[in-house]
Amino acid sequence: MRRNWSLYPYILWMVLFTIVPILLVLYYSLLADGGGFSLTLSHYARVFEPLYLAVIWRSILLALVSTVICLLLGYPVAMILAASPAKQQFSLIVLFVVPMWMNFLARTYAWMSLLETNGIINTVLGFFGIEPLSMLYTSGAVVLGMVYNYLPFMVFPIFTVLRKLDPSLLEAAEDLGANPLKTFMKVIFPLSLPGVLSGITMVFMPAVTTFVISQLLGGGQFTLIGNLIQQQYLRTYDWGFGSSLSIILMVIILLSMGLISRSNAYEEGGIL
Amino acid sequence: MKAAMKKAYLWLIFLFLYAPILVLVLFSFNASKSRASWEGFSLKWYIELFQDRAIMTALGNTVLIAVVSALAAAVVGTIAAIGIYNLKGWRKNFIINVTYLPILNPDIVTGISMMILFIALSFPRGLTSLIIAHITFGLPYVVISVLPKLAQLDPQIFDAALDLGATPREAYTKVILPQILPGVFTGFLLAFTMSVDDFVVSFFVTGNGVENLAISIYSMARRGINPKINAVLTLLFAAVIAMMYLIQRRLRKSTADI
Figure (cartoon, each protein chain N blue to C red):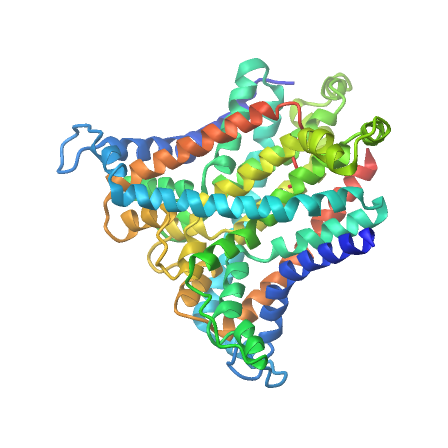
């Protein structure tokens, strides 16, 4: 085929709207306050103040807890899906995907009305004479929102790997005298690790960067990195600090994605 | 026994996934503002919804942005995919990696970086900036949907068309394009869906009071719960289901063709 004039509009677009903006964030993260064009690392230094380290730590902790819960809930689901007969499998997967077609904000908002003090859960509990619990605006609600939104991201990659698992390996393990638990620990789980790894990234990444879930379900009491970044741009107008937080976030995520995709290079991608 | 337990577990997970959505849909038809007790069927919130000028404008913006940005992404992305397909070696890898960048980058960073760009260029933020941002994150989905279709083509087909007397333009529009069209359409639908679903990028890139639906839902949800939100979300959900049904049918048809 012919020469690549066809790439120019695309390259121009990507440079102008993807690469230049990221370079601008990098520039602002290094630009000293108070005019001029002198560069500084002081914005990055601020990230390490105890106040902000606490925020980063909280984001990582809540995202980790959600990721672990997603793994514990999701792995059995993936196993059951992978083991179900082909005809059922398709409908089960569709059933699993449909809730994701609801707008992300909607799914988070739906939990607000379930968890609030006058909400359905408390009304049902009331029938049994249980005092209303305050569930909304707790760290538990934030974790719940993360698990609810990102659980499918854990299930699909694991399912994709498990489905391709050669059944004769399981028979071999059984023939060689392994009990089901041992088969799982020594054969199934190790072989599914690529899926588990991409599941972990696909849950952890959006969980650690969210600012919507923490705002709606945490009621603004649980500042995460995402909230901190948002505040720097929209409330305190501290672009330098916001930019350095963004750069750190981006580097962490692109690095971990790079690592995962390298260890997963031989594996095909999951279901979109 | 074991099979029953597995089934029960799966249904519990489904209950967890569906209960909030069902409650949300159900209470969009509730006669009262109560979020906990059912006071009879009513279309009151839908009527109020259609009379709410702000929400209707936001809905119009969402559709406009999605249609324009997905169309633009489909055109630019398809041409780009043909270009990428013709590349070799490190250049190809490099461009494919850059293509993935907007997908891999956290939404919030994409949103903020584009906001900074528009401010730095003193480009007015509003409908146009939203459309530019949505084209940008829609493009990779088109490229990724079209590339596999190109890879399935017979590598000789372009030269064959030229040998048979087609001009290069004719070879592209009459031979290549019809063959990759399913991929283009899938990419368009994906870009469209991503655009309708996007909140984070739009939130940062917009200005001058221009809102899409996600932004108005967010500002309403922050003020508390409102049955009108339930109504608009129910409609949106129905629309997305119809949309995804189309995509699935397309995908299944195109895989059946192979």
